[in-house]
Amino acid sequence: MDYDNLSPKLSAALAAGTAPDVFGNGPAAVADLVTNDRIEDLTPYVDKLSQSDRDDLGAALPGGQVGGKQYLVPLQMQGQLLAYDKADFKAAGLDPDNPPTTWEGIRDAAAKLTKRDSSGKITRSGILLATDPIGRQQSFATLLASAGGTQLNDDGTTAFNSPQGTAALDYYTSLYRGWDGNKPVATGIGVTYSANPPRSSRSSSTLRQSPTSTSTASSRSRRPTRSSTSASSSRRSSPTASRARHSVAPVPAS
Figure (spheres, rainbow, N blue to C red):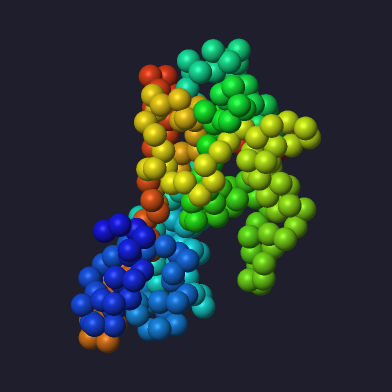
């Protein structure tokens, strides 16, 4: 099922009592599903896992918890990487065996990788971070964590309105609006990866964010008024095609 159609179709199926026994959904949906009594408490099942299994899932389990109870269980974790094309790096005078390791270094490399036509319009972005509705949140969250920030405090209050959050958002937007007199290095805000031209096109990018897929799942309640959920599977994106592909995770400048 197309991820964009998941919520409306799932809501209709839950209301009709025809929802699947197990399904994929995102952690962002868990609170609403619990509030509407749509999914089962899986805490007893998680408690039966070995300690080593719980430790292995430790970083992912909180995303499926509401009120201290486990309603979604993870299938996969998610990480964010940058993939780059060695040939493009060489052509731009960059060393593919010594990629940038700071925000500023990545942006400077993107500036060298960006191509423009005679009018100055970008024909190849130097970097591509996800900016579709879901992707932009993931991109911001990745930059925020890289800057040492967090989205929520321990008491559940928002924490991203912070110096780290400001730094992450300033950096993110600078790629599309320019910075300190430098021109933008990316275009196509709001465009999904699937809508981008093939790698061989002049308008494709050279530094591309590559999220690994995530999903979570849970089992259906035997009670007829409830269906089960799963935490979601986030959309998959393919990194830039390259015969020699490497990855680098952005980190703050020292």
